Length: 426
Image 1 (cartoon, rainbow, N blue to C red):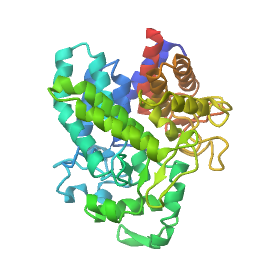
Image 2: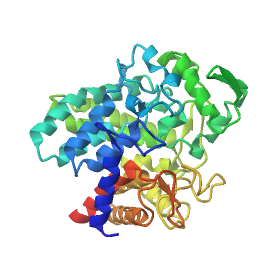
Image 3: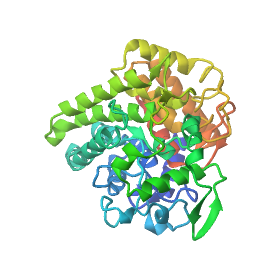
Image 4: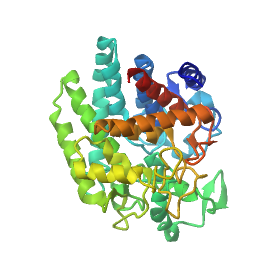
């Protein structure tokens, strides 16, 4: 499939998945607006259609809470109620901090929005329109970053903690296995759903139980600090937050604001990553409740590469691990979502082995940040080879490139457009 056809097919997917000003991840299975997905769509469209990319961010941020938290799902009322867990589980409307008239989840996801807004500004042809968008969204993104720095610094070291695996964006990663297994003694044998009890015997039941506990606290920040049993500092989440702080520093003058607080926050996040999550030759998740680092290496370990200020020796170590047989060295396609040598590696299960367009794209941007043009190009070319071979799938087998998960996946289509733009500019 040549570039022209691939570009046309990508636009076809994005247009079919459009729901008003939002883009749903995929038809059928994901009928609402997801935080990470929608922002990757905006990132992918920043060079293609800045107006639509901006509308995507505006739609997502309509669900922002007064605390500054940007929810991981904004429910599309017209799309029906078959999805579980839906609005009746989250009950966001019962929390005074939630937006009026918009139903959302009570969790967040990696804060990519400032990075997306910066890319929209950078590539805009209508600078007056783009400047107006920056001025409109900048205060919201500052509030988001402040929320993470206050409510979510549960470890006191300058990093934001996720309080549910869904907040990572990499829901089923083996990085969460140990923290979830530690919950077993605390979980009841059953929970109420639709007026009936059912046994907690499914893989995702701990996920639902965690969400219900947080909901029943009234989404209270003090509860997270004092009682919530799942609190993990994730290098990918915090690497993205650091990059977004740097983007806010670049955007601040356009909004008539001081960039220094954002640079200082980025420095604090960098210090926290180095002091709290670096061990050996990689970053690891830190389980705050157990007080220890995780052992399994996943694609999330490379998130801090998004930081241009990361020490050069650590960059070399991370790139060495990325290109080694543990990840890209023995896979046919980049980048396996879990270390291939790990006992938890499974090429068939979400985030336990398959390759994903969004994390490949993030790592290609990270390579560009550090001037690693060969790695950047290889990640882009090989990712395009995946979608040419298997279509815009949710994820891919890292050995044979076959597609897995949903078809016609929006972020795969949008980020393909951005990677194609790289080949035009090269």
